[in-house]
Structures are given as structure tokens and as C-alpha cells.
Length: 313
Image (cartoon, rainbow, N blue to C red; front, top):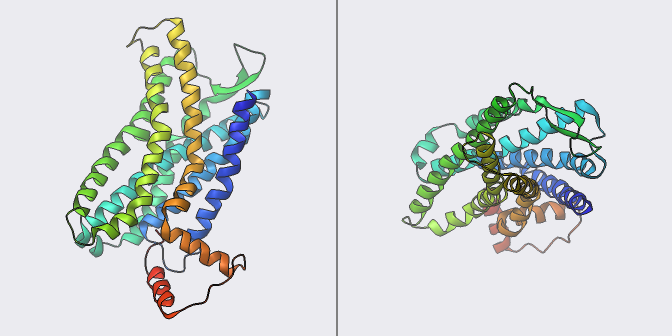
């Protein structure tokens, strides 16, 4: 229990400052944000929402849910909102990269910046609607201990139907459908990059996005597969015995903890993969007096000008 609590606290301490820095670097860009930058900014906000829920779950592991029924619903909804909005923004990024590189002419004709703001609003609305099942969570007495837990509390007569419905929504809208959009978009985009001159530069510009998507899959795919296994057991599609059920419960808890790790992964990817992000962060630190300003030569001035006219990645 102590190890789990420590794990949650560490993630919280890493995710909050990391995502705040990402938001600061993107938000302080003087140029108008490109659609991908805007989606990345909102992705950082979604990660912050998830990080804010971690102290509550860390406390609940050792002391039970001591925050009351209302906070149980609020924290669950925030966690679900972060989960859905993250995958939806990643899907938007993959589609935007596809349009820019594969359908460049159509992308230039369309007002992508105006559309991207509408898309962001739509994503938050859809995420909020999909998180409403969190209202079914309540603080109640645990059957296995004396602690209060924050968990789903369905009517016994319709519990299986509600649980199956919410899980189908989670699997399809929160994983399978976005994944079926992202993989073809990136597959076609990478194929196009391999066949055009100067594609290496564009590949460098896409590295952050690709790593962000891979990180999401590594963090959340195991959880989805474990929950799918539990769903098959509960729906009696696959017969099971008590030992198998206990193993699935343990795997679900472990993979959910892995999923929570996702909230602090993206800032690390920006720092180590995004060359232009690091340069932009260095500029901000120089303006704040945290780093000494390097002498500006003609070549560095030209490089800086070129950098500021491009996206931060």
C-alpha cells in the first residue's frame, strides 16, 4: 500500500511542473498557434486534470475514501474527462499531420486555425459527456475491508447492463475507434514522407507527435486489454474460476497505475525529443534571467529568425 501511495505521489510531483512548463512554452509563443500546437496545449491541460486527481487516489489507498460522496463523483469525472480528451486530442493531431503532409493543398485552402478551435471545444464537450457515468460512482463501505471506497455503485438488478454499457463506450470511443484512425493516418503520412524530397526534416518535426502516441499506447493499451478480459468474464463470454478472477483484478489495478503514469510522460518526451521545444524553452529562460544570454552572431540571428517562423517542434 505504501509503495502504491508513493508511486501516485511521484507521478503527481512529476506531472504538475512538467505539464505546466509545456503549457507555458506553447502558450507564450508569439505567433498564432498551429492546430497541432493547439492540440498539444490542450493535451497538457488534460494531463494536468489527471494529475490533480492523484493525491485523492493516493490517500484512498491507505486511509480509504475520506473525501465524501460528492468528491468521489467529481474526482472520477475529472479522471474520465482527462482519459477521453487525451485520446481524442491525439487523434486530432494525427489527422492534422495527415492533412498537412498528405493533403497539403486542401490544408492550405481550409481555415485550419479556426477549425482547430472548434475541434478543441467539441473534444471537451464530447469528453464531458462520456465522463458522465462517473456520476454513478459513490463512496460506500468496502466488502473486503472496513475502509470506505469510491467505486461504481449500480442498482443490483441492472448492474451488469450498466457496467457492460459503460465499458463498451470506454473500449470503442476511448481506444479502438481513435486507434483505428491514428494508425492509418500515421501509416500513410510516414509512407508519403519516405517518398518526398526533404522528408527527413518533416520526419524530425513529427517525432514528438509519434512518440506521444506510442507513449499513450504503451501506458493505456495494457489497461484496456485487462478490462476487456474482465468484461468477458462478467458477461460470461469466457468461463472463469475464482483464481482467474483474482488475477484479472490484480492486473487491472497494476495496468491502471501504468495508465496514470501517462500524465507525466509527455513533458519528458518534449524535453528529450522536441529540439525546437528545447530551444523555445531556453529563450523563455533567458528572458526570465535564469540562463545567461549567449552572444548573437549573424548566423545565430538567422537561425533564430527561422526558428520563430516555424512550429515549436
